[in-house]
Image (cartoon, rainbow over all chains, first blue to last red):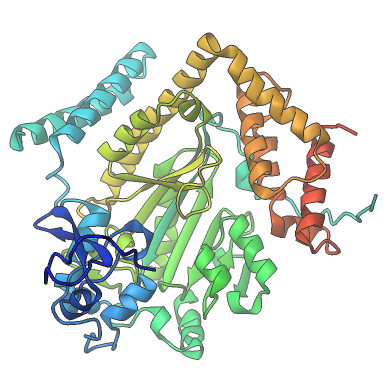
Length: 157
Length: 347
């Protein structure tokens, strides 16, 4: 059940905000408090399942894939898509879901902080491998570290 | 007190009894492969009869790999739960079996679900944390399927699943781990740092969110798009080593600095197990977690793998299968308490 917040709807500014939605806009996670009418009219819906991923759609939730008939409402109800063509048909709507699950794409475009953590972990494993005279493992780890350092140089923070 | 006749046919899956160098932390690994038929709607949108028809078509060429074959809808709910408890099927199929077909290898390490939420879902389990081996075993089955089928593939999202979370290189790798040291030493932030850095996710050992009452945790590859399977194996392998090291270090540190707290946790669990009249599922798992910790630190004369076997055998549907006359939650909880005392050789 939607919680009633004391603030006004951030879209119309008139009615009480009843629904909190989370949207991914421009790669950023934004919280919006909206009234029920605005949530229906602009196609915003509440958190999709417990993962709090959702999407904004201007086409309405009855919009269906022409190939299989699966609607956006069906996606909300089940968390599933109907056919491979749904991925193209609902591309705009599921983009934020895909980013939520899979993060930035391509994979090389990862946070500097994550690269730094990976390199630290790899160097610790390298030291251990050398200490235990597992030289083949050490060589493999050194290769991976080199790859990560190359990525770090390509995408400076 | 009631005496129950013993159906000794119920044993734990073989793979959970395998010894391995990381057995103190890693209960097992899961390698998961997903494929869908090109130019076909996903199975959940089809009528049950059509899903059944497609099952035969897909199984052509791989039937010989599996020993048993069951339509999930023809199993009763307790049988479906039994399969879930043994990691054969996701919980969704317990509740909504639809037109899915379940195939099992003779040792239950390899399962295939045909026409579940996806057309082909293969799962391989191993007690040994060797992801390269696991993926290559799945490739054997996939190569046979590839001879007769074309798969749905998207230029941006890779191999498609009906679930957007599962799209990508077609594989998901999981570590089924036991991390009481990290939990007790309050080092979850360090664990999350390793997980986030390698594009992994964290959840309950049987799927779903974290079951916060126990340190049995599933760590799985979450970021699947843009990574080939070799890169996935590399990432999860490195993360697995780092997590094992963090857990071992946490346990040793606790033993050095908080030995009393650690021993209290283990021996308190033993005390409850010795005297409890009933054990509900969550308390049972929590006690086994403490036992497992105690076993790895030589505080209890138990083997880690015997505890892992108990983890499966003490689940509800396993008890119901072993003792058909038990049906109420209280009877099952009572049996569970007696089962544990028997395993610990306590009268």
